[in-house]
Length: 116
Length: 116
DNA sequence: CAGACTGTATGATGAACATCGAACACTTGG
DNA sequence: CCAAGTGTTCGATGTTCATCATACAGTCTG
Image (tube, rainbow over all chains, first blue to last red; front, side, top):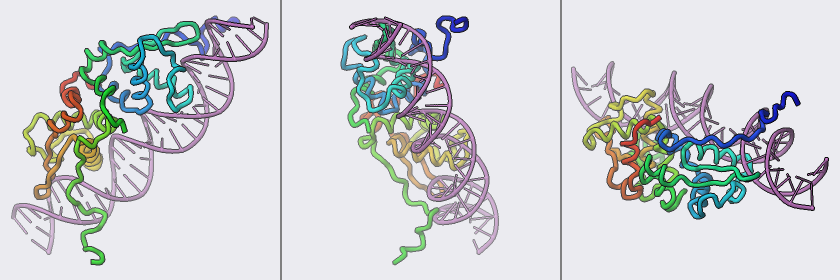
């Protein structure tokens, strides 16, 4: 269809939009980490090699839609980078870049005990 | 006393309840810091000697009730200690204790540029 | 004691957010 | 081409949270 223009519909999937940690406000970073699901996501991610996990590989107690939302928040906070490979979206934790912008914060999120 | 006394009404003011940083969950600490008003409060606090400021001395763009609420959140997060002196409630930033529990986090909140 | 000042509790309101179910788009494999 | 798998968007829902206005309790000073 004419209009479909090939790929402009609402549900189309362009390359994921990323924000570099250098451009992330402090409050955005803290808010992104102040959620139990997202903490679990980045801890899972930290436990695997870069690009090893696609979104569906994470075992968090929420549905697909919510999970997609959480990854969007993590991208906006400069915590996660994503890359499409076929139908899958592979993930990488932006350790060094994020640590340059907020020294020690990621370590805290990964190591502090008793999240709740 | 059965009734214990006359001072049990709703608006009575007992000594403020504190939580030691050691007992603060990670998410509570992050959530407490993920607010622009509270960031401003602790930065103000960090710029003055311990016990130098009472609640009304802080210049944040919210009313008294909201300010009182924010101090309550900061107490619960182990960030602030309060002491009553007459009608005033004096404040202290719990730098060392909080830093022992969450190393580097307070420094980040105090020094990171571009809060928003 | 009266009045001014300081801080808290309560109830209400509006905004932000986490979540879900369903629909949609794309990729890959039969 | 069709079906299965992956991830996003949309609309709706319920909850949490920041805020205010008001009322109240306590302290201090005159």
